[in-house]
Image (cartoon, rainbow, N blue to C red; front, side):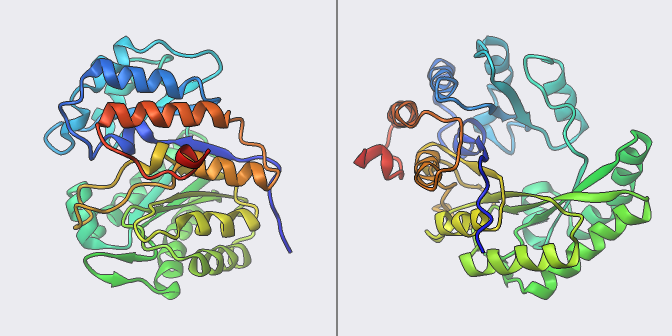
Length: 313
């Protein structure tokens, strides 16, 4: 039985995920031109980039200048990626122009210890050790619901595939932390930077979580298209009622810590929006404006991108 949603929330991650693997020499004026074009597409939430240390993400060295100079579009919420309190404080200094507040409290752990070390400079054990403090903070803030993020739940370029049993074991651990604090879990995020997702595994995992934890009503899919099947994985998620997805214009992006410099980015925003529209699902996006933004994105980064609809029409 199909549970297709009437509408979806698509967060285009071009400015953060998309640009983080591109040249750090792209001028700020060009990045602002792209950000302005994205604001015309009907997007409701746009991440302007990440407040990360330029040592680790050189392309984000100009994030403060972007934050200061961009002109917000009416009706668009602008946010940014933050990875620690220092990053949060830097981003929060631009509130309300940039809003990193009010997000559902989420605890996330990588299934791949190697990736945790390379991407976050923390071991998996250290991530788990920090969960209790995060839950305690949420409880003190009066949180009624929490969220869980599974990092690279399907497999790793360093450690190989992860099984359903491994996924559910980590999920049980994290949800148990919330339950011990008297807080229910309403959302689970799949954070698949290395792109090991396969459509059938996405479907089976969603069904397993729904069966074991009916309190989970929302899912968030951040799946990289490293193996060319993620649009199909997203289709399977749609069939089960999932409403929150991350994409990027032209499939831009990739993670510099995935162990493969050619690792692909997201599903192209224009391709996923086209799929949703063909299925009768509202996205809020103007597909023609997305195609225009994809053309601008190719000019900004200086090479062809990987979207299909932007080229075929």
